[in-house]
Image (cartoon, rainbow, N blue to C red; front, side, top):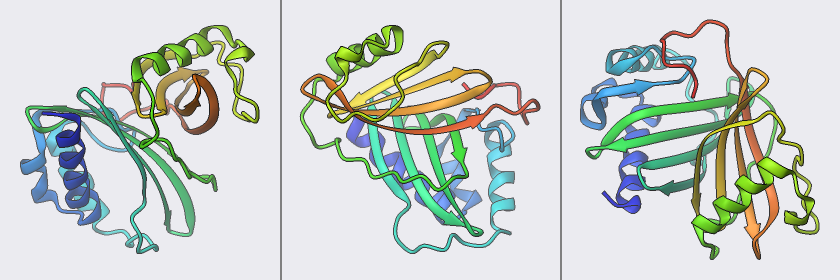
Length: 216
């Protein structure tokens, strides 16, 4: 499948699974060998069905507009960044999916219960993903401020971060990393091959997980 098809499938799956809270959609959209990394959901298709049954007992999120801020994809990976109001809290969520055989095959996420604002342009802006990824990886390794555009206000020290996955589309690059017992989803927008803006969703890795797959 192309990245366009992967995006469309993931969006359709999320609408049914999360938006409609439909456990029956698991058999339609989820791979039989589904690997779960979320710290809130048990492993496999059965664990996802159980989580959706539990989700049906909770209030519906307060907003009517779509909570999805960004959808970006590269190869078999699709990233959704969402921001919603739920049970009196503003929550930012990074959901990363791996697609195989036209279905959701693996899932990672991080949930940040803080009032951050995700307003992220850049998907439609021009950029060379391979070049942008190399620049971001270089910055992670060196912290070279020569790679920063004027006005960049994001973090500059990524010492100790271990990169697990990195995807790029348009002018955006997403890095999934771990550091000091937490998982990070750092999103950069590049302009003229310089880091121009930054957004982050992070979560502490719990000591006890409902599966043995870890968060990364």
